[in-house]
Structures are given as structure tokens and as C-alpha cells.
Length: 234
Image (tube, rainbow, N blue to C red; front, side, top):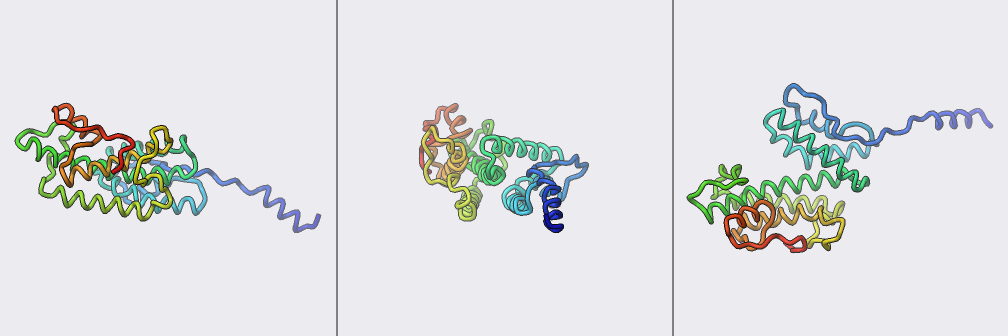
């Protein structure tokens, strides 16, 4: 064996294996962190340079806006812990591209939650204008009904933008129709189906078919509506 070959084999054998990608390494902050500190905590440790770069891009593009909205440290920590559990669940179900799926679904669900508040404000104004907001719609009370349409239009544009930029990387999340009821991808589509539905309600007031808390509140108050079917296109 040549001397150079010996050293090459020695270096190869002594190379330390790469640590696995481990996001959501959240420190114990005492003050609200900066955006860069939040991103570093979400990206965590380990993984390849390409994997970490992609995770940083996804974090800044898809997660940071909702995290930045947390006005106090306790709420931020709880939100990060919830995200960590969501990522771990995605990884358990399908390790490949778990962070990508988690980040996109989290962004879509953030739109869904905002759309739900707008739909609640629209329906309350249309159906019970002189009554207090029913639970769990209390957090929609501050929304000006006159601004619902423009806010819903902006959220719809956000969904279109997400689909344009990430649809090819995770096409089943942005499907125009839901998969069969026994499909493993149903849950991924569900978030978008509800987001689209709630935006439709916010823009039109049409509650003939809806889902989530909107359906529950309307049904409890005797308003005729149909529960959003998992295979219903929106």
C-alpha cells in the first residue's frame, strides 16, 4: 500500500459522521428574541449545509410572520413548543421532507385561522348584528366588518402565492380536490380546504357548506348549513 493511499484511508475512517438535522432547539430566553435568534432556534443543529440553508429559507418565509406576532415571551415559547411537536409528528409519519411539509402546512393553517376569524366576523354581522359574539368567535369582535372583504382578498392572494412558490415541491397540499377518504394525504389537503372555504364565506357570506368552528356555531344556533365534506372541492 502506498503511503498516500494509507493516509487517505486513515482520513476517511476518522471522519466524524454528520449529526442528524435537529430543528427547534429553543433556548430559555429572558427577553423577546430578535428575528435572527428565532430563526437560529427553529433551524436548530445538525444536518447538511444545504438542509440547514433550506430550513432557514422556509423559516423566514413561512414561519417567522406568525411567530413575530407573538407579543410576549411566554406566548412565543408556547408557539415554538407547539411547532416543535407538530414537526415531530410529521417526522414520525414520514421522515423524508418532514420540515418542508411541516412549514408549508403551518403557513396554510395560519391563513386558515385568520380566514376563520374573518368568516366569523362576516357571519356575525350578517346573521346577528345586534348580539354579542358567540364563543369561540370572541377574538373576531375587533374586526371591522367593512374591512373583511379586503382582508380576505389579501389572504386569498397569500394562498395563491404559497401555491405558486411551493406547489411543485409539495403538490398534494395544494390539490384542487381532496384525495379519497382513505388516503394518507387527506390531512394535508384538509388545511387548505378549510382555508379556501373560510375565505369563501368571508367574501360572500355563503355558509351553505362550511367546516370547523364555523359549522359548530351555526349548527348550535339552528342555522341550516352542511358540514364541509372531506371530498368537497373548493
